[in-house]
Length: 287
Image (cartoon, rainbow, N blue to C red; front, side, top):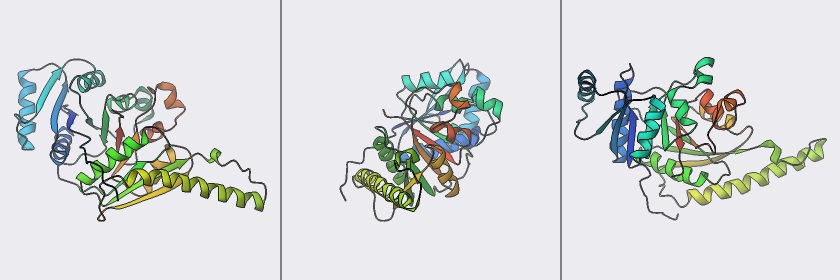
């Protein structure tokens, strides 16, 4: 197996600091992730700095045994999604960690929560954690999109390096193929067989493309790496696969264009995942 230089993809991590019921657990997750990746940690609070706010922050940091001298804390007034985006760009953040619920009600889905608003036009890679925990939880399977796209190689490389830092034992790359790519129209047993062989050839080409990427990564024999091919709606199929497999993290490419309100009414690709997240979601930015 060819080995590439294992460049750390995430060196500068940030998380939103809000005084919510899940704040302590989300900070604990951010602390563990930054330590595992040996990355700088920045905390961002969308609001004015105050004595009461500083006291709350210090209390939270003390609870999770995080030295306030080891993190950068930024206070900035404004709408949370805009503040987080602006600070991530200014601070050159590689990975923004946010809390997100798996399934939002229709009103919030169409209006957009902070996490989902940022997901539709991310300034950097994102990790949306649906159920942050105070105690360390081992990551099980990581599912990565293998879509035929210019961003996919970067996504697979970053996701695999992230998974290896967390000693994940199972990595699956899922290739989603639109059924329309099968040109043979099924009318009888003969065309059914032709369509089957056409699918096989498409799968072989996709497997070759993915394994070329995987074989250049420093993945040892202790990690089970597999490639799965599914025919179906892009976004929906991989989300369903991750749910069935009870994956810990699903990794997707960032959207090509800024997604708007119409994309929520007519879901596709990433919108299928955002509408009902099967697990924690990582969205990899190409930068």
